[in-house]
Length: 574
Image (cartoon, rainbow, N blue to C red; front, top):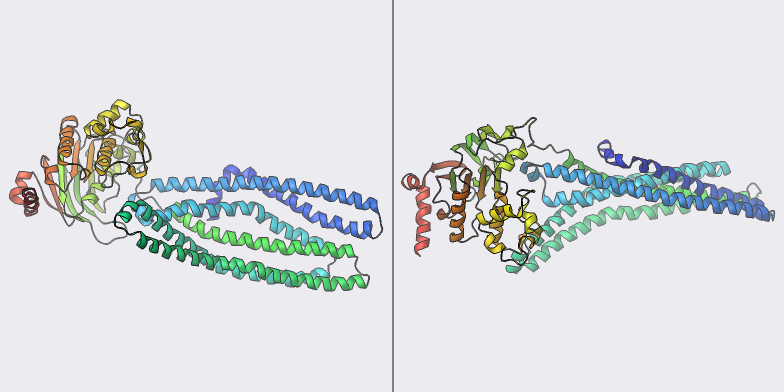
């Protein structure tokens, strides 16, 4: 995992090298200052040698200035390297998610992916920055201060043989217990993000049903759960400091007792004891710093496991090498197609055999859950078939370059989504090079220009996130126009005119027939009026083809079609 992640530090390798070097320089000055202090006390003060005091005092000031400068530069370089590393990791993670198929996206929840892109990447970035600074400072200070302590008094330094193993044992136990708690905390963040995203996305429904109190209660439940899991994790960190301080003060008491006796007997100078105590504090504080580093690394490890899980997920739908880059026409053929969603044993589609000619208008009817949207998702290869073949333009969709295939198949989903920006920017999702004239023509075909031209800013009108400042029918017409800008061979409308009135629906169909004669048009609809002019109508029942014929033929041969027709006719009469 470390080898996989370290490559994101490559653009900042020089900063990642010089930051620890500068940190070691700072540590050397920190260790050198107590050594000078020892001679100031032993020679300068005890022997009343002011020259020594001034000389060594100036050296201490110079050392401190060098240490401060090195420390500041190290911190700056470490921050740039750490946050740059995190930015590279986040960018690669985002690119990987963009390559995911629908099947891959079904494996991870959206809130979990958001947490991994933000919170988890930030944890790893912080750990990288801390490793470059504190991760170098702590062990370097420990080693150098320990050497100086043994140099001053090897006998008294034996106290560390007891103190250091005790501290290390405490830290090891805490770190071992902390890892699963940090993993649990990250999962709780996922859950909370899921609630927040759902509530904010559906805030209008919540208000319309007066469910604010219910949602507040649900939020409180998950928020409290996160608080409890965070407390369990952080409580271990809280224990670290008092446990370490207990060992530190016990060590200081032991050294003062031993050192005091040595001074009384004349075997040690006071300056040596002062210097030794400073090294003691440096040694023990370095161990505390090291424990904090390991705790951060423990949390970062939990985050890194979650991030690498996404990075290591195999994208199950990719473009083949030398994939086809031309779609001959809009013909579509299903050959003995079976399909079940990844991770499921239940087939959503069974034995689908269809032959659709280029330029045909195909209507699709079926009850909720009959497999209509699933069937359509196989055409632009949003999912791969489990068994059989789907052909577009006479070629298996798996043989096409994905970009070519999806540019040739415009798919207007049930959930018509607009993105924050301007209308022009939204339209250019269909064609980044589209001119205003091309955009207006597409809007006219989709019967959207009639309201767009009345907006004060026209194509420069602002679109709020999700297109919430437009009505459902307006959003549907705008997304249809966006799809038309791709100039596809096949256009699929998955119940995409349900929010428009019947007159507008009819005008859209007439525009399609007049302006897109060679384009295959597949329309999923609940209203028979929306597909009454279709060349053929496909009826799906529980994932199987129940009938596939013209409306006139279906009236005679399909019980399902007649029932739908009669029920809708009764509704019209009523």
